[in-house]
Image 1 (cartoon, one colour):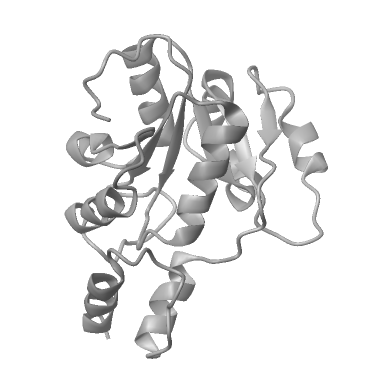
Image 2 (image 1 turned 90 degrees about the vertical axis):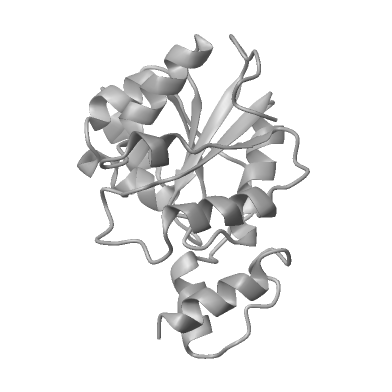
Length: 205
């Protein structure tokens, strides 16, 4: 599905991140979000310059290409180049406002439990909590985020919900480390990009 389609007032989500590299955990989260929330479509948005990371290993164009190939054939998934074209630091509030204006309705913003715990350090986080429906996917075993949710109640307007999805502890950092240690990443990265991902991060040694 292209970004130019008529999607006014459709129910949609935003799933952003570095995707350095994209892995099968990301694909699982996207699948659960689409179905659990009843979304018409989901934007998957690689960040150009994530504000909470010192650097990104793979260039934007490569991460964008990996995402396109990883989600190929998924009709409700749109790989967005918005943050790459916008340049500058990839602030989530700017992306949310952009798509709210494009579609005439607020998005469902998909974030990890770790991100929710640190959201008060995000740029204009109070405004962000009012501009988007926040959807959190679990990241940790036997933990609760009730206290975090209560602390955010004065700011959120549209609601914060926890996605009923499997616990996914796989991370891009772990994948990069395994490649650099010459360990297997079988089943962790989509088959369509696994050879290229391995070759790229092996060069980073």
